[in-house]
Length: 401
Image (tube, rainbow, N blue to C red; front, top):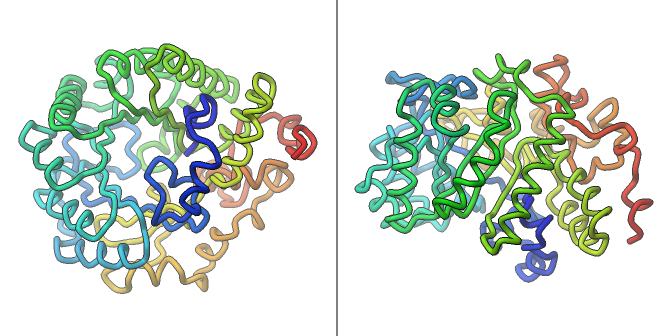
């Protein structure tokens, strides 16, 4: 997760994180990525059921009941363990999490245990009553997925009317006083919608947006050919930076992040180095603290059936099940070969990743994408768009520290 607005527009300084000792239990949510202990943020896919049919769904969600979902009581036991373990955030996802009738109860329990509870949703089920309920239980944030304006979004979501229902969910959340943001997955068919998303942020006074790079997992594994070229990705990131700065300069700043391609960090830094070298010093420090990809360390996933994964895209490799053993024990058991290697993955990456001078900043990027394309978990991430010349640049040589 790369905070474009934080880095490029200077809305966060290294001193902001240092003020809290960079301890994840003390850091406010917008600074968590700079923690030094990397206690895992947990994505809990509470259900596989969904009322939409998104073409890029990593969970292969369907609008049907499944009989292997964790019970309410098992969910509370998971939350107890995570709270004791020091995980700062529980992100309830799916499928569509709001199809679970006990979702408000589970979210309320996480808040009671001192965790930040957030929901990743398609927004179509956020009625005024549901929004008020979520506000009352202390929900921190609702991330609503949109992949463009009405025509494009409904095509990706597979259901006519999904866009209008999501917009109503946004309005209902805002009326209830819940912080709401957008989630957008970039690909060839919707990249031209990015300016329209920024316009929507401005028009509806939405404070946050996350732009997700495509990950080849679930139904998204069928979309490899729909991913942007390296040149296209660079252009998209430049567009996101430019639009972020436009709103910032206009006095309407938004929190803008890119997710799932950590080449965005060095790319943003190298752009700033040309435009604002003094700011680039602070950005480099923040990127080092961010550490790039944290699958298996700073982010983890629990599935609807209790299986534990390195992140929500690693469903082909489970480390264990929370019904059999607490998450905290599974997560710290480095005798499991892959878990141990993910904790120190910079030692195992190959090819241009192994020789890249930005490895400490990027963290080796996404291993799932590498495996999907090459069959080798440790091969270079094919979505890395940095040139050979850029990865050969050592930050110690391009910027004196």
